[in-house]
Amino acid sequence: MFYKRIVIQPYEKDFSSIKPILTERLESIFFLPVLWKKPKPIPSTAFNPERQQFLGSFFLEDLLKEKQPGDIVLGIVPYDLYEPGLNFVFGVASSLTKTAVISTYRLHNSFYGLPEDFSLFVDRTTKEAVHEIGHTLGLGHCPNPECVMHFSNSIQDTDRKSYYFCPVCYEKVKKALGINS
Ligand SMILES: [Zn+2]
Ligand SMILES: [Zn+2]
Image 1 (cartoon, rainbow, N blue to C red):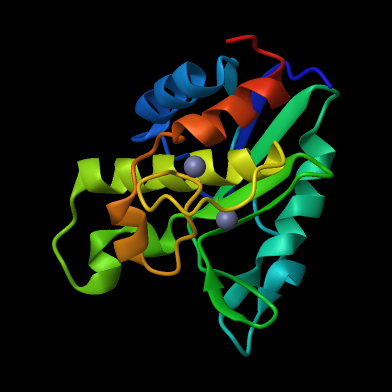
Image 2 (image 1 turned 90 degrees about the vertical axis):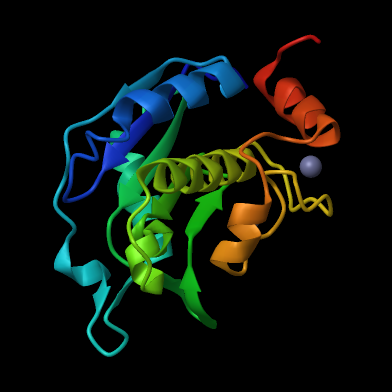
């Protein structure tokens, strides 16, 4: 399996404020060019009015429409996502389809009643993006709490970890990308 690029598909918003820094970080971690698509509206079928949330796995399928061979496709949604059986998810990914989606909804300090902090917001978004792309490459969760593949159940878990893979996980990433280290 050869990967050629990471395609980012924003929904509803263009996320222009985080675009340059997220692009630079993802390109340096995954050694792949990052291409941003134009924002796309969210079909109303993804919305669950009882929960007032959007179904995460809906996006994994929708993103297949954007996918060319060799692409890893990451969706970014400004709204809250859920999966059946979970109150919310920061993101979801499929290693089969190589598509992933993250929500920035709970990455804003304002969600927790705190003043906005742009650099914290970009770091959190980077962590969720790297984590879900890691899943598309077949990586599971890592017991190392500082590794980006550590499971985040809360924003505290996200803040504790870095946006880098631990050496064990990074070996797996490089192997999946066909990079000899
Ligand atoms: Zn995960
Ligand atoms: Zn790890």
